[in-house]
Length: 172
Image (cartoon, rainbow, N blue to C red; front, side, top):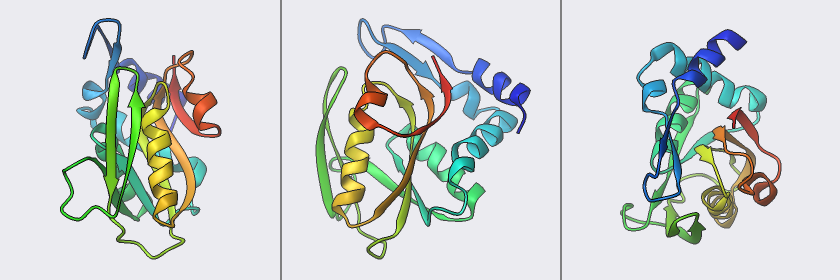
């Protein structure tokens, strides 16, 4: 992957003001997802620092699913969804968390052997609530967190302070 290819991919991320509510600057990754080359280089960039260190990729609903599925295929491993409450037929664990514009709950199945190494992927790191919930649920189910990787980090919202060490492809 080249820096030119990554720069081009980053240019496809749109900023949408006041969505989903007033004062929020939403990062729309749909144009990046629709571009095969951009999706390929960003997926490779998401997993590269963790190569060989994980058994499965977990993606947080909803855009994190898309990136995690692509990352799992790229890495040759499986993918587990971390879903919003009420979307899984047999959740094994759930975690409540705060968003920058509300509260939510995520759930996950326990389909892996204990101690499995999980790479946690999401699309955007803002305040860190969603990723903190993802990290908590992975731990609660007895899996080992191999790392956290996000497509886009929004600086200045405290996410990195809350999450700690993580890999980011793009930052603002």
